[in-house]
Length: 218
Image 1 (cartoon, helix red, strand yellow):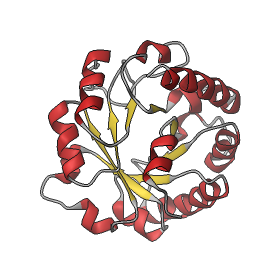
Image 2 (cartoon, one colour):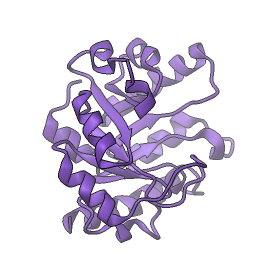
Image 3 (cartoon, one colour):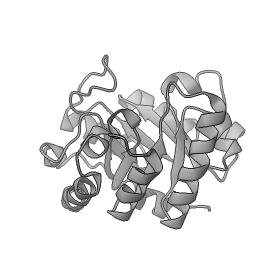
C-alpha cells in the first residue's frame, strides 16, 4: 500500500510506537487491534531484544492489522525485517544514515522516517530522503535515558526548516500534549501514554482528540 505525501502528513496525528513491557498478559496484536480501532493513525513496531524470526512473524501480523485499518506501518531500525514483511517503511536514527543509504535499500515507494533533535540533523534527514522526521525528546522519557528535552521554540525552528512532516516524541502524555501548541508539529508519537495504560483503547481515543486540538492550533 503506497501512501501519498498528504496521507503521510495526516498520519502523523497520533503515531503509536509499540512496547511489550506493559502488555499485562495480553498479546501485542490484541492490544494493537484495540489501539488501531480507537484512532491511532500510524503504527511503528519496536523490538530491541527479539530474535529475527520471531520479530518477522510479529511484524507480519501487525502489518496485516495496520493494512486493514489503512494505517501506515513501519519497523524500527530493522531494515531487513521491514523488507521481509513488506512493511510500509522503516524508521531509523541519525547513526543509521551515516555512510548508509537507507532510501536506496528500501526503494522509492516505502516510507522512511528518521529521528532528529536539531535543525541540522533534521535537514540531514531530509537530504537522506526522509518522508517524515521524529523529533525529540520533547519531555522526559523513560525509553531513552540520554534524551535531552526540546523547547517549543526549538521544535518550531525544526518545523520551519524542513518541508516534510514532523512528529514530536518523548514523554508525551494526555497531561502535557497541549504544551506543544505553537510548535508547528504535525502530530505526536507515544509509547507508554498508550501501551502502559490499563485501557489502551480509551487512552488512544483521548490522545486522538487532544492531538486534533493541538494540530488545529498549529
